[in-house]
Image 1 (tube, each protein chain N blue to C red):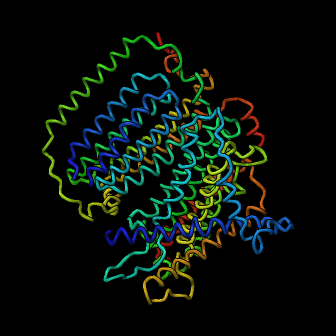
Image 2 (cartoon, rainbow over the protein chains, first blue to last red; image 1 turned 45 degrees about the horizontal axis):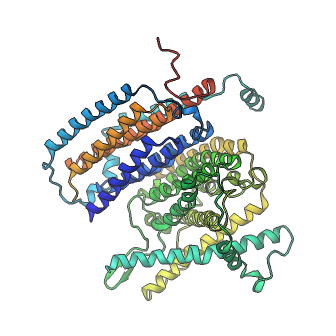
Image 3 (tube, rainbow over the protein chains, first blue to last red; image 1 turned 60 degrees about the vertical axis):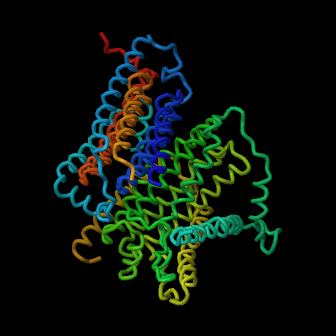
Length: 180
Length: 342
Length: 100
């Protein structure tokens, strides 16, 4: 039963991951990324992390990827040539080099996983292993500094993003000044 | 079939019968009649007493109309979008508790479909996926109005989700868990949350209107400037799917609001009878239903009395008013909880 | 019980697909999406190991990764908007002003 659920979502995420990378239209890529994220969330539940799974859907799929879609539609990058994908392909040497490199990397990874294969003996999940409270206790005791730093990082990112994306010296800003 | 599966299916059937079979048609009628009442005209009154059969006629019309797929649309996304709208709408109610635990055949059942620990978060997560329907509908329609509608929708939903989530956090803080049945139990011992957290309630209410794209926040589908926004190109059943999803979303968010702020399924001074379990379940469910219907009437009343916001006003309200207000509410709740006032 | 090595294998494959995308595509947005894919596969690995070792540290790191991804997405997309305003393209091969 668990294996069937795993197989379903693993297959779903692999196929959608290929679509993310291979599709010419950025909107389809982004929508496929949502499928990958949601099926990963399902796998998180299988692995006994329902809280992280919920956050994955809420934060990742529900907010971050919507931001991607917003920018794609704002700049109208879906159908246009602005992404450059429709133009003549670049020298194929670079592409083959990349694929070769990825292959070597994949081989190494497979070998590593193969060596560890069979060493995992899982006990059935306990109720307290799934609970959210111990996670919160850990986060707000041992890792409180990391938590605060992440908060600061987000603040910096927000300020940076709004400064970078601002229209400099254009009509929009003058209007905003007048209004403000 | 196992007992758990049967129980879950029964609960799902109860919710679906209420949302799809009862609430949606009645609300269509209330919407049209109340609109007529406010605009001082009779409204639909030909079919059945007071036009009560009008929703049936509307539904039949939607089913038998020709389903048009324009030639220039992005077909896969265009066909997928109504499904994407219905899926999150029909799945959010699973975490809503609708009664006290009942005992059937020696087993205690909690009256909630999915009894999970991160209940509220799951609700918010599922409902946040609804934006993809709007975005893919608008984008795939290959139409400037629709595209504008979905750009507005994505920005609006993200902005108001922040305030909504922060308001919800205020409710969860004194309770100390994400479980909604704990929130209901907490409100039975204390005041309804709408009283001590009046600011949070207000923020939630306004954000709720924005999240369901209802007037005064219906900019993604503003008919006077964007034709019909993201669903301009849809017809027949696909259009009906969008409309039904909107109503179900309203009902689900109303139910969440009632659970978080107005005591959930518990009506004041009335306890569900402790007789046979089916009676208990039905009576407590109708407690929740009454509150949902009250909220739906509020939705209709507001829709036909308030004009639409301008886009910059919408963004200003979301970021400069609601977000700070919800933070103030969170701070007040935190202090009150620490001091033991709550 | 699904063996942990299956999860690791899946995460490895996702990571490789993401790497390929980030290295071979030239649209800035798609490269960005590929990076998100890689981050997600790392998250899967972390959760899998957290399950294997019975240690919550892995889940916490996933929380941090999500926050960093949010920050990264905000700044990155803002950069794309700014670049698009000046160059009307986000084809990374044509943004070669700083190339010698």
